[in-house]
Length: 56
Image (cartoon, rainbow, N blue to C red; front, side, top):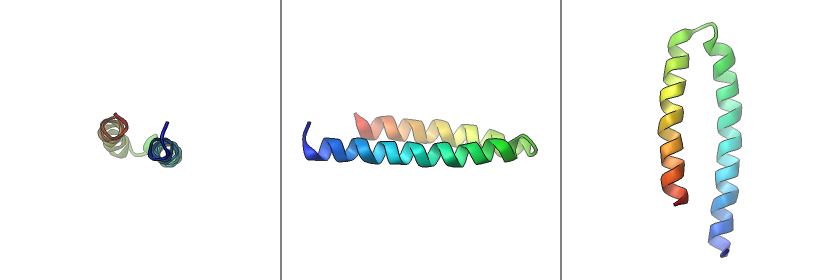
């Protein structure tokens, strides 16, 4: 593993941790506001594809 690879992994983990925190909040709010939940699911799929594309 080169230094850039390990840095990429660290950033991916930081990014995922931030997403988990944000989506945890959105899910709690989304239980009361259904449209927000749909948007969150859609954007989560989008960011997942972005992340997979970056890490490959």
